[in-house]
Structure formats: C-alpha cells, structure tokens
Image 1 (tube, helix red, strand yellow):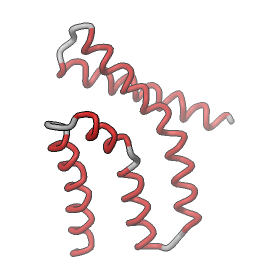
Image 2 (spheres, rainbow, N blue to C red):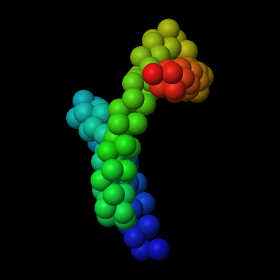
Image 3 (cartoon, rainbow, N blue to C red):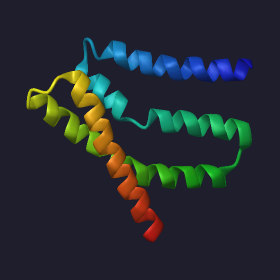
Length: 112
C-alpha cells in the first residue's frame, strides 16, 4: 500500500509542479510537460515491480506509435481557441478529434 501511495504522490507532484510552474514560466513549463514524464515514471514503476525489459520495450514501441495521434490535439485545440471558441467547448471537441486520430492509428497498426 505504501508503494502505491508513493507512486501516486510522485506522479501527482510532477503534474501539480508543471501546473504551478506554468503561472510564471510558460515556456519552461511547456518544455517540461512535453517530456515523456508519464512514460518515464511508468517505466520506472514497471521496472521496479517486474524487471521485465521485454515488457518495457514493447510498451515503449506502442507509446511511440500512439504519441503521433495525440499530437493532433495540440494542433486542433489552439486552432479552435484562436477561432474564438470557448475553452469548455474547444477542449472536448479537440479530445474527440484526437480520439478519431487514435482510432485511425489503431486501424493502421492492425493492417501494417
């Protein structure tokens, strides 16, 4: 139970830290947020729990292919905001477009 609590706290501190940092240093916070911190933390937790490097390699390859459709969000969201769409509408619409990109990528990965 303590191990799980530590994992949650470390992960939450990273996200909260980026959020707080963005108030003063937007570009630095963006650079930090663009790092694969969630993936790195997941790799560490999985390695500490299993030491299974095969599993980590497979996870890393899958993450690579699934990062590509997630980038669609970062193109659509600011475009919608720039067009004057409100935050609370632009956010879910961007997520829906991103989910469509994920579906397309998963389909492409099945046929490749």
